[in-house]
Image (cartoon, rainbow, N blue to C red; front, side, top):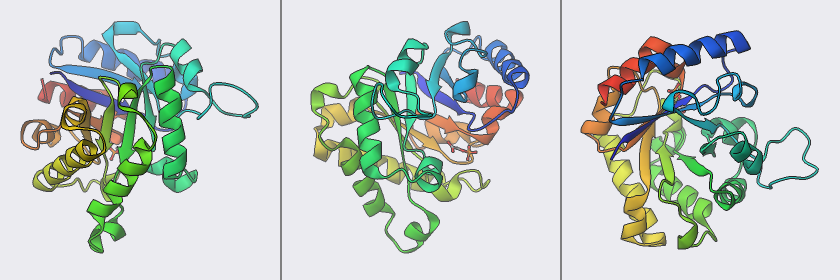
Length: 250
Ligand code: PGA
């Protein structure tokens, strides 16, 4: 199975020109990558300037609305993303949970809306530093997973459904989770999903690691900790570094 390497550009870069430049460099650099599927998640406004569908790359959005249309000023729906050519949508990123008040209930509604139009969700889960220090990391993941999947029948879980384990304390800090610990959490996520659905469904779901991934540590998460891919933030904004990451797992 190919690893899934997702570039989460977050709210960067600040001009169309820079976005296009970054995209063209990445597209060129990953051209011969065989063992990884590379997906770019730019800000909404750049989806067209980075040219969805170009260069064999996958595209995704960093967020979506929980409805397909209607009176929701400022929002973008899964149906619109689908029509713009996206295959993926990141849902429940910790920055959305922290800064935009996204609750597990909202995450659940967004997942349902994305699945309705067959957009592949990349569901982000992870504990904060405080939760980890208090020994509650496992319970946090359990709660986030159970609430995220609530009311979603087995039949809706698409083949590529993706969960990203992103410990909040590791995001953008240069302090990645060590691989043994990350592996432990990956196995726990599989177990929780097996308990909700069944083993077969759980094993069909890809689990990614995210949080201070760089070209030096990327391969460890795939080759040692058994993750099926990576969600890359900061390092995805530097073309050379991001290309190195995709090559290191190739
Ligand atoms: P980071 O971000 O790679 O900059 O830590 C990862 C993410 O937030 O998805």
